[in-house]
Image (cartoon, rainbow, N blue to C red; front, side, top):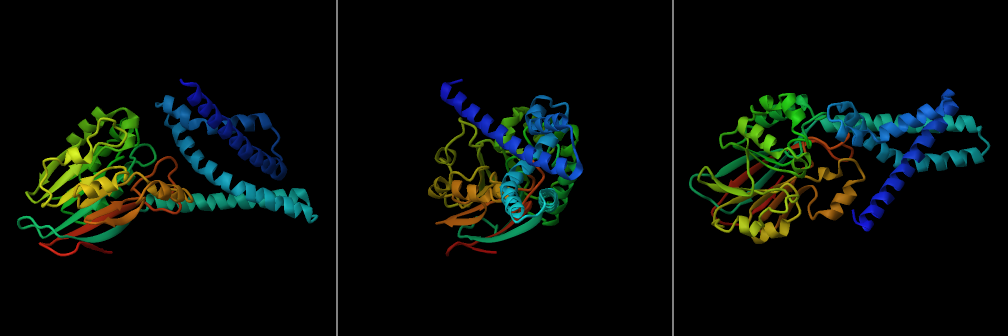
Length: 378
């Protein structure tokens, strides 16, 4: 490891450990004062174990409890860092007014705990209760008899331990209820490792996704992280989901569907090379997991670009970060002839929490016309 990377890694570890200590110290002061908790060594060990659980779970894949605990810890970690400095300031000011220290710690700590509980309940509801967002587009291209097309799109399901088989059933039920012509899944279908997906037989449920023109998907970054792409592709083939790997196909002899490998793959084709033999007078729909190359898609005559990846930050205020990173981090954006739609995702990464975002399915109704301006109607 290069010295610069080693120093960066050490810096991150020190900052993380310091923030974890800060959270743990606040918890100890409250529990010790309000509930007379006395064994600080056992408490410290438990906090340390929880803070390392996600990493432990990565190596002990046969013990999923660690990864589950670690996932929830990420949510607690973020909001504790946001809430605790304010609560410390409030407690300090109240103590200065002469209120008993013990009472201040009890009530301020209790208020923080209650706020976190409410936030987790609200975030869990948002994560497991998807909504359907509808977009109606006009694309000034027409081929053959095709006048209209309904797409059902779902990205970032992250099916695995926490986004489990009941969430798969929700996806199948909600998507099929839309009666789509085609179903598109632009990446992160599984959460890293394909083993939980296959062990829980989620594919047997997912194969019930049904559309006359078929079900298609692409790889997301988490399929790469898991290192089990061959197993994943085999399972997708078994259940009738066609994963496009830098491929373009003609669907219904009416429009092109292009599917890119994820940006994680250094060997993926550029959009220009992928579409080199494509007739741009025909409609071109593209799936690209990360919405990082919108301008390239626009320049190369793509009509509709579908992406996910961002989760819209998943837990506010993270959306302020994704908004700065991506030209379109969520929702709809039009550039010349190009329509881009980025989904916040159907599932979640890490904690099953969505705050400031919502699990969603996208319905896209396209009308093809011979000429005129393209547009959107929501």
